[in-house]
Structures are given as structure tokens and as C-alpha cells.
Image 1 (cartoon, rainbow, N blue to C red):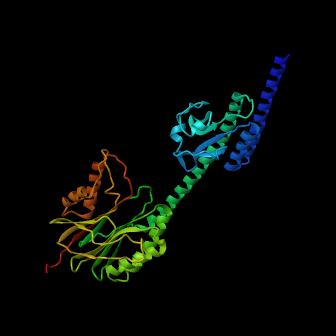
Image 2 (cartoon, rainbow, N blue to C red):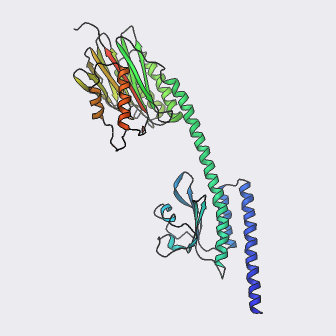
Length: 419
């Protein structure tokens, strides 16, 4: 009779647990359908485990919404006096692929719990529940099964929210890049001058369709001068494109004043700083070729040195100042001046060129580039860039470009009288 009573009591207890499970699952499902927040779902989960299943200690780990490889405690019970994990728990938890008793000594944080329940979605872990003991003389197996079922529903719902949020962020990023690319296409000149006295030719490969590289030029036939420039802005997308648009407007406004290169660089630095307040900057190289004097004046503002190629070899054009926009007034500024021979090439580029690596991990450093440039004296700017493309493809052997790649090459041919 006693055994029959105990059996009946056990069945009633199991029935009660099943009713609890069904009722709570219905409540959680309704909450999910109503698109309640993740915090509210975690609160319902916490309340159910603590009040209805008498769990005395619990920690629920879920993926960081913004980082797949990081795991955070979303909710817990009786964790107040427990030191938090000193490292990310992803590697530690990934060792457990099925529910079970935690072995002693597996990890200092895990030693505070008895059970672990991994939650998998398409064979990928999306949550881990750590459980202590249950209050009273409870059927531990039944309760673990209920917790597993509830956790699965909660974790899948949270994972779906996370993936949906990531999709929205990705769509926003793609829209930002697309808009930035359209703005940038309007900023980069469609064509560059090819004359008997000089020629400009470019290579322009933004890595993501929109980059931070900038190039431009201005001609003043009445003075016999050509100004050309190249720059590299911090940031990507619309923010970089808008900064570039502002920079381009200032470039043409200030260059039209026909002042000295010294004053031009000081003024355009101040203009960039007014917009960015020092939070963003641009590396910049600008040169002015005077056809009458056959002379090149230039300023290098924190940019990779341009390479001047003549019959005597190569010369790095590195005189100048700091990057533009980092401070309101440049502390020093030097304008470099070079008297040119009859034929020369000026090769300017952004650091996407010298950051390039081959499959062996070797970097295309400045010495390799300078050696290549030294062998190209006497050819046109377009021929130089064509040869450079072939040389880069041979070097990288299929490796991806690590960043935006921009090259602006100026060939100069002087046909005047020697002084």
C-alpha cells in the first residue's frame, strides 16, 4: 500500500512538472511571438528556474551579440559572491558537447556547478546552461530535461534575434558602402591630362568598392603649372566619402588662390581640423610642377614618400610635415624643391601598395619598389603603370590586396632650352 502511494505521488509530481513545462513553454512561445526583448525572455527564464524548479545556482552563457567568438553570462542565480570568469569561456565550454555532470577540477568557475547543458542549433553551440543543485528532494533528471527544453526554446529565439540584428547591420553597412562608393566616384577625376610636357596616369583599386584613397590635379596653363596630389583618409564608407568631398572642395578653392605651396598646405590642414576636430586625419602628398623652370616643389604630409625616377636613379620625396587634420596648426612645414632633368617620373602611391604580401608572407617593401622604379626610366606614365600591374600580380601570386591600392604616376618631359 505504501509503495502504491509513493508511486502515485511520484506520478503526480511528474505530471505537475510536465504541466509546468507545457505552461511555461506556451508563455515563452507567446512572448517570442510578441517579439519581447531578450532581457524579458531572460527574466522569464530566470523566474521559472528559481521559483518553479527550485534551482539554487545557475549561469546561462550566450554568444556576445556583436562577436561570435565571445560568450557572456546572460542571466544567473546566486552568482553574487562568485568571482566572474577571468577569461572568455568559449574554449572552455566548447569541450562539452552533451548534457552531463561536470567533472571536478575542469575549471575554477565550473567547479561551482553540478550540471552542464549545451544547446546546439544546426550542430553549432548557441548557449550553455550551468546548473547547481535543486532545493528539496527533487527528481534531478526530470528537472534537467525540462531545463534543457526551456533553454533550447529561449536560446534559439535569442540566436534568431542576434542573427536578424546582424543582418540588419550588414544591410546598413552595405548601403553605407554603396552610397560612399557613389559619392567617391563623383570625386575622383574621370580622366587625367596627357600632354607633350607631362602625363598623369593612375591605378585605383578600392578594396571594398569604396575606400579612403584620394587623388586629384589642377592645371594652370597661363602660369605653365601642374598641381597633382594623392591622399589616404582614415575611415571607410559614407563618413570617409563626406570628408573626402569636403577636402576636394577645399583643395580646389585654396589652390585657385594661386598662393605658395607652403600657405596652401597650412590652410588645408586647418580646414580638415575644423571638420574633424582631430578625430580623423589624412596623409597627403602634393606636388607643383613648373614647366618654365622645369622644377618640382612638393610637400609630403605623413604620406609614403613619392619616388622620383631620373637617369641618375631614384630619389625619395620625403620633405614636408605631419599628417593633415591631427592638430589645428602644423608645428613645422618644409617645402621640398627639385630641379628636374629633361625626363623624369614621379611615382606616388598609398600604403596599400607596400602592405602587399605574397603567399610566403613576404612584404613588398620600399626597397623592392624602388628597385623596380629604377629600371623604368624613360617610359610613359601609362607604360609604367601597366608594367607595375604585371609586376604586382607576379609578386602577390593570387594573394588578396590588404587595403585600397592607389598609384598616381606623373611623367615629365622638358623640351625647353637649358639654362
